[in-house]
Length: 86
Image (cartoon, rainbow, N blue to C red; front, side, top):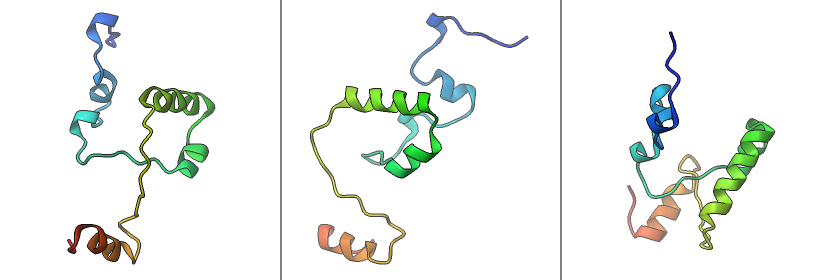
């Protein structure tokens, strides 16, 4: 018989552990980056609405530059920002 949790059984990472997926607490680094094109093309309308609500709730006024580590110029950007290469 499947387990159907009650509200009191659930916590923030209940679903992630149910499907053996990492939680936010398992993530390394300081930021999460979501490419808009991926969100627009890979999420259904309900997921897009949920993501939009989450982003509105976080409401971060900071803006960041993001560099794809796979790009050939990434090491140059890293050296410029940190004064060294990895």
